[in-house]
Image (cartoon, rainbow, N blue to C red; front, top):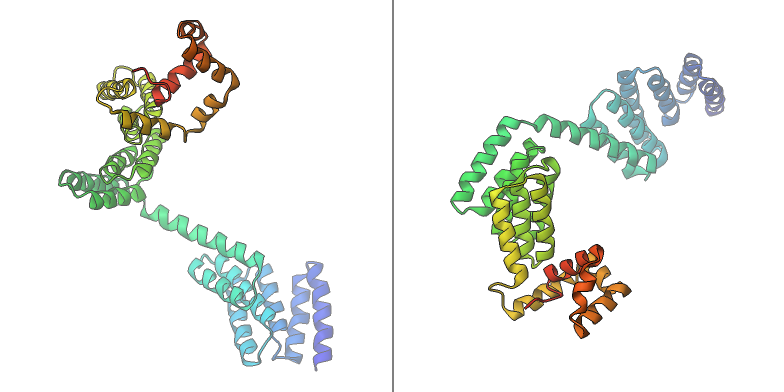
Length: 326
């Protein structure tokens, strides 16, 4: 009796909208009894069970609905809706792996933005839990020591892997980032080395070695002006640190061109022109006038250097190799 079933469904929908779940259930069950091969009525019953927070009963109901729907070639949207409701109930039961699989099945039937969002939420919750379960500061330290031993043996790739595993175990351990950053330098992966140094500084701003290592990487990248800033920032936070002072001397020698060929100086200047701060200084009309005047009238340099802002920019250009002092 399909007409009777549809009439009961309509009555059930009215009750459902009025939040009378028990009343809706009575009509949906009558509809199902009148047309037992229609997945829609079974899915409606599942919706009521979900609303009543009877999540396991909802799962059982949807699984029956899917069996009937597949047997009687239900429409793709109806199958998709059933799988999505199955995913919702499983997620409520904290069975995230099964919920994700149900959402995947739903999306295979019909693409739906809301289902995709729920799948992403379930995946994130699952990943977050797995990550939290993996955290172990003691094992992280074991991986760091393992990485240190590999580093000493010159096994750079293996050391990076050990430090990476340690970071997964304890992502707030600044020493792991510092050590991995140093190892990235050994394999000439300067981009990764800089990121690790920055992360180390973020986690522990008063750790001087991170600034020293970052400045060394910047020197290797022909960015002496940036290395100078890094050393100055590090010394402001960690005054008197011997390692930072030593790196600072190396930076100053690079800026002054000690042991640096003309070709290297030109390469450093070219690299500096990739820095937006340097480009902005060079494009500043006032600075252009200052630089032109300093070339045509060197005695004017002293006058301009009395202006603190101009002096800062000139020093930046000297450090970058744009202005060469010898």
